[in-house]
Image (cartoon, rainbow, N blue to C red; front, side):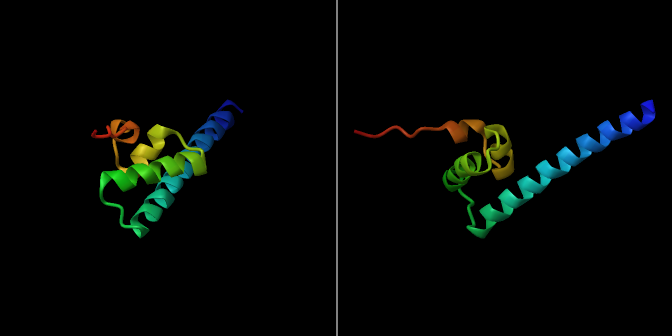
Length: 79
């Protein structure tokens, strides 16, 4: 019985990992359709992913291949 519970826990973790990887792949595919190679458009896609899919900022940054500092970057207006 103990072994069965351990296997169920492992199975649950694997299902969660698979779901995360599947979501990353979907996000990357979406980004590649728009050919977003520069950080600025990828940052915008990451922000949309956070809002649309409810994913974490860290997860979005990993999925789109940008740093968290790039995600949080706010350009200064020249004046």
